[in-house]
Length: 142
Image (tube, rainbow, N blue to C red; front, side, top):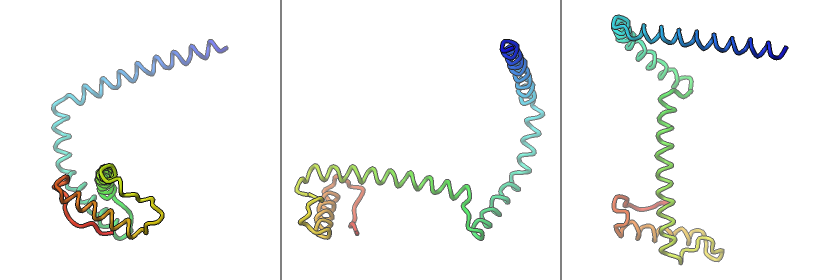
């Protein structure tokens, strides 16, 4: 009984694979015809303004109904990547500073948090103004 089921499934799979191959070939052959490509191109030029209008309408609705659009999600993804890069750079800068300045002990319980913050700001400003990070100048505010 099991052998019969296996044979049936094997044959079904074989015929399905052959049918899929034939259908894919017909699709490829029809897509390679110049007339179909020109027709698709003409139709896409006509429908593109409608798609743009729909996207703009969805943008307006998203503001009124307070839901994110595809563009909003894409912008958030870009900003997330930029933020991660900035955090990595800040982490590297802090690691370098702590290696070069062992007197910074942020875990020292006898120093107040405001004193540690002032000390760190002073070291960061010195580091940034020394030319090690010439493209990043300015004051830090915490």
